[in-house]
Image 1 (cartoon, rainbow, N blue to C red):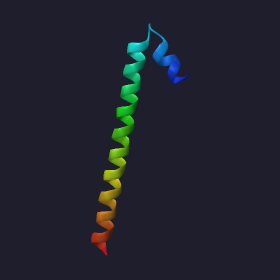
Image 2 (image 1 turned 60 degrees about the horizontal axis):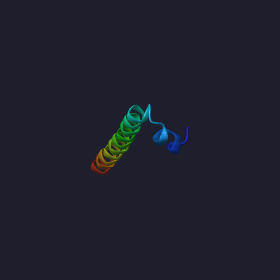
Image 3 (image 1 turned 120 degrees about the vertical axis):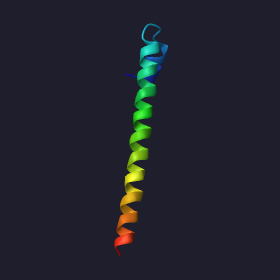
Image 4 (image 1 turned 90 degrees about the vertical axis):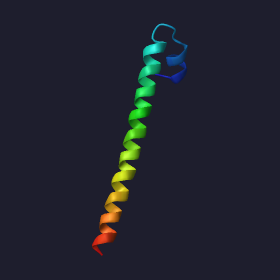
Length: 49
């Protein structure tokens, strides 16, 4: 599906916009949790040395 098709379709625009927002939030949450995991792991490694 092309993004233009998603936004131009009047019937499913609300549901697809909602899905797009949910996917974006999930992506941001996964990125932030990955960054947090990396920082905690690096802190533990530095504390061990």
